[in-house]
Image (cartoon, rainbow, N blue to C red; front, top):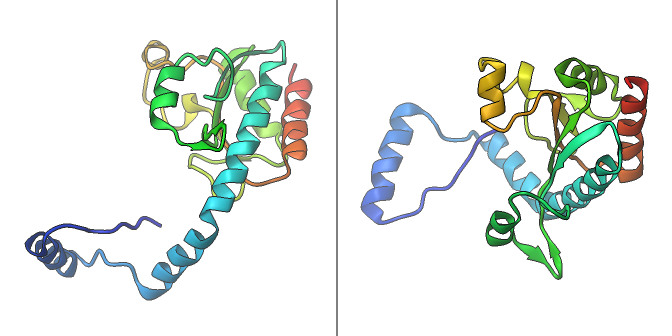
Amino acid sequence: MIAGVVAGSFDHVREVQRRVITLGTCLDPHAAYLVWRGLQTFELRLSRANATARELALALAQRDDVLRVRHPSLPGYERAEVAERVLRRDADQLRSGAMVSFTVAGGDERALRVMRRLEIGCEATSLGGVETLVSTPFNSSHFSLTPAERRAARIDDGMIRVSCGVEPVDALVEDFRRALDATA
């Protein structure tokens, strides 16, 4: 669900309230309860997903058939200065996010086969919750672009995007290892 908060002057909030009443964009009580319930464990889920993404990125970066891994926790990350500026830190560890992008040798066709061999990661064009979601941009978020336009947007042939969930990291890494090995 999508929800938000309106904050501002009394006049501003009153104008937004008028539009909410007119357009009917207010959450129903059950949806509001679900948002509230989810927020109670959000910090725990986010911390776990961040840690899982770091471990998955490290494991993928060690494979010869993975051409590139993009994750802010990796040494040599091409946008490290941006990550340092915008991401928060937990103690000494940069909160590097739950998203990992990686590019497999073999292009888009192999990427699709890898994604569809996963048993834990689920094919979906969304950001995850507690489950790990995986997509290939060429046939989901960026399907309307030509291959040249995708490359110009830094979307490599063979790219897989992963929104890490809270599954046991060892099981998730093994799931990706099996899928990559099976499609080599």
